Length: 106
Image 1 (tube, rainbow, N blue to C red):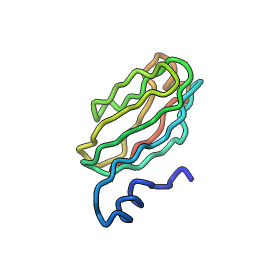
Image 2: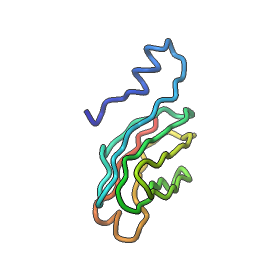
Image 3: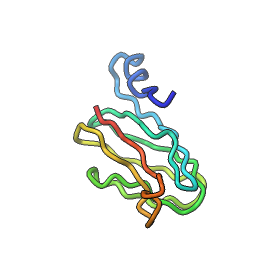
């Protein structure tokens, strides 16, 4: 269910009311899962990470660069432009090793 857009469904159910809902991502030894997440433009995003190791959650174009150390870090930001952006770990060699994904902002 990688393409499941929980935020869009919750917004629809709420009658168009914007709801802040956490997105769950797992990060570990050179991976993020899921690889693709979809969020709404101009709506707050809260990402709850199940993390092992020392990593970052980085989206350069959106100014997001959060260190991930410990088991349950939280990343919060509000995307102000639409498009598809790569999220990745900025620790040297991790992005090249496959630790990246795609954020779609609609």
